[in-house]
Length: 454
Image 1 (cartoon, rainbow, N blue to C red):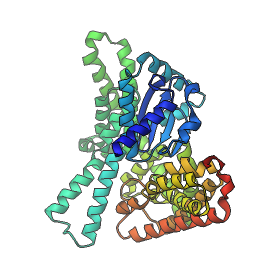
Image 2 (tube, rainbow, N blue to C red):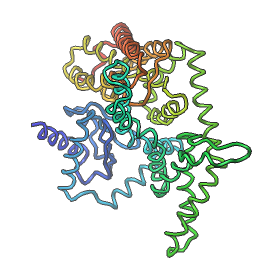
Image 3 (cartoon, one colour):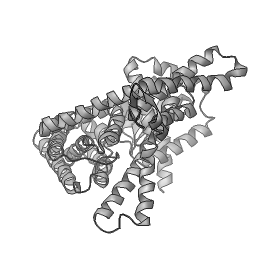
Image 4 (cartoon, rainbow, N blue to C red):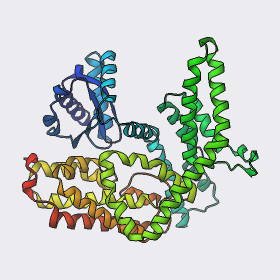
C-alpha cells in the first residue's frame, strides 16, 4: 500500500510538472525532490502545492518539492521509473536546461561557490550522523557505567564511530576535487597531504609542521587547488602523455604549495574562525546565543546554512567540541513550537494536515517541511518561530552546551551532546518549543492568514 501511495504521488507530481518530456534533470536530498524543468511555463506550481503529500515548494536554482525525510527517497525512485518508462531524459534538453539554470540571475558567483561547498559536504551527512551517533551513545553508556571503557566492546564501538573523523580530510578532498572539475583520487591525496602523520618530519622556516594543521580549511584549499592545477596542466600536455604527466605535476605542485602556504594559511583561518566564535560566545553569552539562534532560520531559507558545515567540523577538530551547533539547533525547536501553536488555533483542515505531516520531521531535526510548508508561507509565524529559537539559543549559550560531533538537530542531537550536558540541552529544546508556541499563539497567527489552505 505504501509503495502504491508513493507511485501515485510521483505520478501526480510528474503530471503537474508537465510530464516526463519536461524534466531536464532531477535528484533528491534529505527532504526534497529537486527538479530542473525544460519549460517552466509548463509547470503548474499552484497544483503541485495542493497535492496531498507535498509539504511545500521552493523555487531557487532548481524547483524543490518538499516531501520529508525517508518519503523523498521512495517517491524519487518511483518518479525515476516513470521517466524511464517514458523514454528517459533527453540529454540535449538536459544540457540546454543546465546551461539555462546556470545563467539565471540568482546564480551569482557567491551562490555558485556556496553550491559547490554544499556539494562537498551534503553527501557526507549520512556518514557524519551515523558516526556521531555511535560515538555519542558509546561515550554515554561508558559514562553511565554500563560498559567498561577499556573493554573490547567499547574499543570496537569507538573505532567504528570515530574512524570517519580521523580520515574525514580524505573524503572532503575527494568531493572538493570532484566539485571543482578535478580527479577525485587527486583530491583524496590532497587531503592526505594535510593529515599524513609523516608531515611531522618536515622542518620549514625553523618550525616543525604539525599533521592536520589547517584542518578541513587547509584540505579545501589543497583539493580545490589540485583540481585547478590539473585542468590547467591538461591544456598543455599531449594526450599520449596526459595519464603520466598531468597527475604527477598536479600532485607535486600542490604538495609543495600545501606545505609552504595552505597548511599555515588554513591554520590561520581556522584559528580566526574558532577563536572568534568562542570569544563571541564567551563575551556575548546569552545575548550572542539569542542572536545566533534567531537568525539561523533565515539562513536555512536562503541555503546559506550549508556553508556552516566546515565551520562546525573545524570547531570539533580544533577545540574538541562544537558550542555553535546546539544554539543553531534551536531554530528547528522554535519552529516546532510555532507549528504547535498554529495547530491549536487553526480550524483549517489542510493546514492541520500540513503541520501533522511536518511535525514529526521537525521534532527529529528536519525543519524544512515546516518552514516551507507552514510558517514561511504564513509569514508572521516564521518571525515568531525565530524569536522562540532565539530564546532557546540564549539558554544553550548561557550554559555552554556543546556537541562532540555534527548531526541533525532536534531531539536526536542529544545523543552527541557532551556527556553531562544532555539534560540541559533537552531543557533548552523545551524552552525553545515553549517560546515559539507562546510568541506564535499570542502574536504570530490568526486563522484568516491561512487563506491558501482553504
